[in-house]
Image 1: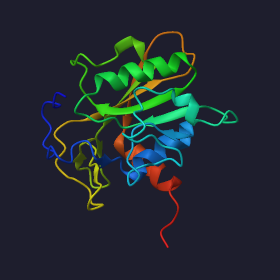
Image 2: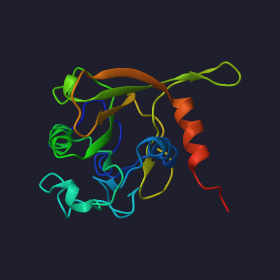
Image 3: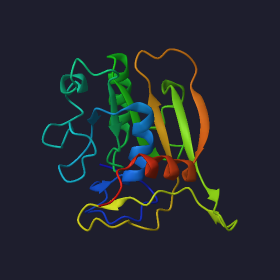
Length: 192
């Protein structure tokens, strides 16, 4: 597998990080995820999840989603060491009626960038804090071994959205990291 250029995450843990809970919660409010399509038991964000032992790239994700699910949406924070097969799989599952929201590095110059094959692309942008200081939109992923945020992400992030049964033009827009933080924190249960 080819390394994702520019990554400063140690190679042995690069594909074993977790999405911050606030970020997942913000998107879950909108999509109601029923499957985490690329997880480890200790990083899974949905009750149903696919691990490397299951090989999410070779199974139909719909087989892991209850037929009674209102909207079959999968969350996907793919291994950044090889993103292309995950984009291809999300497009395949889209045609089978399973929607996917994929968190990926914000880089439209790569071969794996789906362009108009996605129904929507949302770039996560920075914001000015309450004191007027600029805060970048980069995501600090969670180290699965320590549970701590990993600071220093050198790249921005974006959501690639593959809506089920979608036909039409790809919508491209921005979403502020602050809006995601506020929505996500509001959706998370209060700490005991």
